[in-house]
Amino acid sequence: MLSYTVTEKLSRTFELGPIRPPSEAYSLLIRATRNCPWNRCQFCPVYKGTRFGLRSVAEIIGDIEAVKAICEGIKEIAWKMGYGNRLGEVAAMVYNQPQYGHCARHVALWLGTGGKSAFLQDSNTLIMRTHELIQVIASLRKSFPSLDRVTTYARSHTATRKSLAELKELNDAGLGRIHIGLETGYDPLLAYMEKGCTAGNHIEAGKKVREAGISLCEYVMPGLGGRKMSSEHARETARVLNEIDPDYIRLRSLHVSPAMPLWARLQEGEFELQTDDEVVEEIAVLIQDLRVTSRLKSDHILNLLMDIDGKMPEDKEKCLNIINSYLSLPDEERLNFRLGRRVGLYNNLADLSDGYKHDRVEQAAKRLRAQGSNVEEEILRLKNRFI
Image 1 (cartoon, one colour):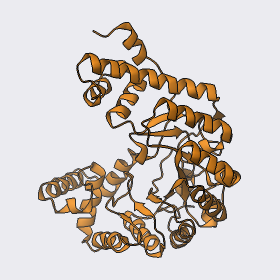
Image 2: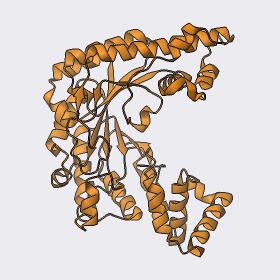
Image 3: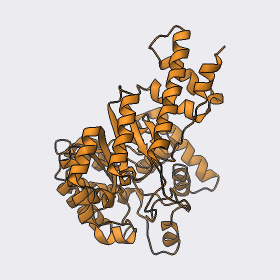
């Protein structure tokens, strides 16, 4: 039976924002700002109907202290159960018991997966005053000396307004990586999507972050140009990335849901979506035009080809070969793969050769047709679950 002290520690709460990058799935989430200061992007369903707000340093540090208390509670349980410093099993136990609450379960997941990284939420923490953000990072580093990295989201527009000296101070304080939503490098498309910045802003911000010594991850959105601007989107995005040469380029394929402002333009026929195959072809154009030393990753559930992963330029041909292998498949096999990806049976293109999985997907497609359902519409419905 847990002592009151341990129970009290596990009952501590702190704020958690709605999203984080997939690569920060096992990071400790600390909410430094609330919502998005821009909040006009046509393709984004997050934060709509909310107001942006800065949190005080005292509030944020209070949350860090709450996390620390929960950690102490989990460690006390581990010692009482005879695990010592081996926290994995105890963290899993706490995570799998909902009565501890979402905050304790989040900390348990973090500890159980190593407890090595922290991500500062929400969408644009870089907008904080530099000296206040440094205080937050310092508090994190002091409270959790085992942290390997502290990361955050930022807008290019905000990064351009920070001086190089300020960014270097943040690097020195321990801000290890900034995630920026580039989305596209094509100015007319940036304006159409109301991104609130230009290709020039993206380049200036990216170069400045890199010069400050902070690792930079740029997010690109295949399909964002629709059928009208696909070619320009791919080529201009590659041009901007070539100028920046970020540490990471991550693909985040567009999917439009009713929660997005872009939905209205889609319904009116003003914006026309590409097919999955057309988006894959667009990605090939982007990769072909890249002249970077970045790591390219396709690590989002909405992406069709998760296999696209490699260090540029040496893995460029490998990535293009994956795309060519998919596009050279017969129509029915491409449909089988797309349905299999969306139901979660396929993770990569090689899974298509798994006879058991292939047959299951094929039977699912036959059942849908026998019921009078459209397979393409079912794939779209399945993709809606991921938004």
